[in-house]
Image (cartoon, rainbow, N blue to C red; front, side, top):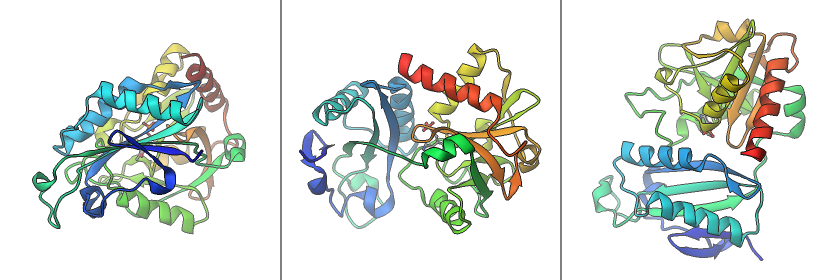
Length: 286
Ligand code: PMP
């Protein structure tokens, strides 16, 4: 059976899962989304994802046509119909079908789309040996332009940085904010470790408040590993002992090189390994 995609209450075969060319999600990137993991048949951090989704929707003044419970039910049905135990869910709310003009008030009703599929963001050996990244020349969207806390369907800022990474032969790019502080990568949050202290850019530095980031901060607390959220500069990363990225799709991936410079001894470090193992235990045990 073909993979089934849920669109506004109906399942479609993957190849027939389509939306209107008049949907403002396509015309203007007007919509919000989530990327969510399912482990052992359970939607990981479902409440946190629903909260962020509805905050994002509110941030772009979009009122979802379904409640959090209805969306959760749609995700569970999509997992079940596709017989997944472990998968990745892409959940979207688009502004809906409108006219050829920006005004979102002319759109009839937002559309909800649930795609459940497998995902492999980076090759498995990068989790073992570590990843090289570069700093992008494009900065992360300024919070007064479009808050990076809104997970919107407008990812061009990140895509331009991603292209720089790919051109440089690496899978990810570090993005700075308007002040020159480190913000995050194109689809992942970033952490560093120095002298046993885990550090990650603060929300006020213009980042998406990653759900994996939040879980890692909580795991640090449980494991009695000191962890702080603060403004960090590229230099802090250059002189760090360890660095790693977090994201729902990426999970926890060690970074061993930034802008051609080895981080620490150029190999994944012990704190990264410990947190990665704790993360994988946590997602399975709940
Ligand atoms: N930053 C950006 C820009 C992202 O798109 C994502 C999600 N892919 C993240 C960080 C990580 O967030 P989460 O842990 O909630 O997936």
